Image (cartoon, rainbow, N blue to C red; front, side, top):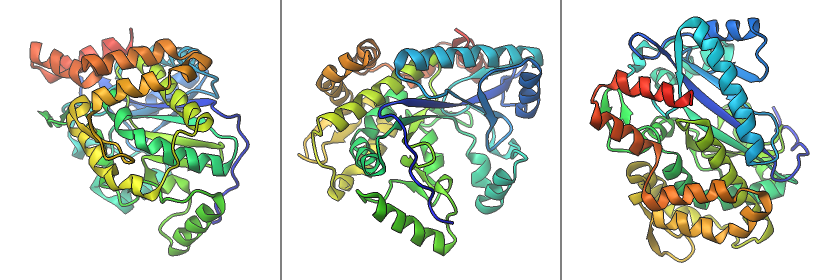
Length: 371
């Protein structure tokens, strides 16, 4: 199957997807309620993009095409409120967070769709372990070559986004020591990681054709890269963020990505190179494991910085573009989080330390999601 043509889209438009946890309100473990919730939402005339995910204790919501931070926040808030109304009818809870703190992967149920059943047959237990929850952000690109240039430029800042969004310190009842343990589940898949380094669409089409001829892939959905092009939308899709605990943080993260993208498109502060990826896996691991305190190695200069400080410096550098886009407040709030070493992983650990019962922690996550 050939790669579909790259669609036309307006540069720097946004689309946001959030994968959310469905939990029982008696024990706050994950519950296989997605089919029932989708039926109730249809009955209540829910307006918005909502769909099942790979296991039936997950649900995904998605905005339409947004122009900026305010638009994203308004759409996510409306989606959240409609989803909560349906959840109340079923007496289930909904929350953010990159991983459920104590669910057992073996108890999960694969969704009924043919695609998800195929993935279960292909990947075995990894499919159930894929019950993790992420935020995906699409950025509109003026053309396919520009999309690839933006993809590889944005890759330099993947650790920054991981640290800011990290919300998965607990897995199967234990503190993993990672700020974002969710990404470890994704790294297990053979087609995860980074995209190949090509900077023009014809070369990318050639790469895809070779992969398709092997039978390994059929579409872009088969790649679980940290950032991937989405030709049917005319976007690149940033996929490394944990689902935040509240919609406001999700909107802020989208605003930061939009601002970085404008800086890369307009100023062209550097030319991406294959050698940028020499430190990619190291930087990404440091962000997942240590969050803001991780080491970030500048791929161009080799300078080593504490990641939290590097985030503050980045936000300061892209300030003029935030002013143009109206994202100053959102970006400044994230810079302050980096300076004070505040993220959702810290919030989860602090609340667990005060009351070390994981079901109670999930209950608090549900309350925060509804704020």
